[in-house]
Length: 110
Image (cartoon, rainbow, N blue to C red; front, top):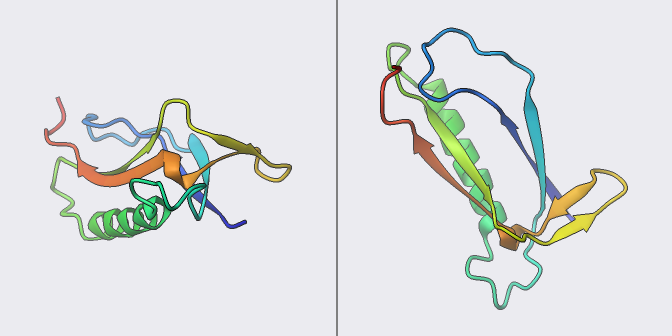
């Protein structure tokens, strides 16, 4: 079974612009394919997360350094998400139960 990792580094949205603490990373593991592709609302959730990650990373690389807003990826796990337990990574969600999309904070820092 193929497993993907989506690593999120915690940052404060709409901060004052000073450097934030680094190193707080949350590793999210999910399956490459849904558990039940025939009845899944979006059987391509895993692929969509990879696409959004690529788009947002590109936006970050080309972001105007004077901009006061930042693009980011929202990674959402459904309430009651089904979990696989592995001896390699611990908990792995089925991709049926995750969603990703790109976004941007709308306001400059306070």
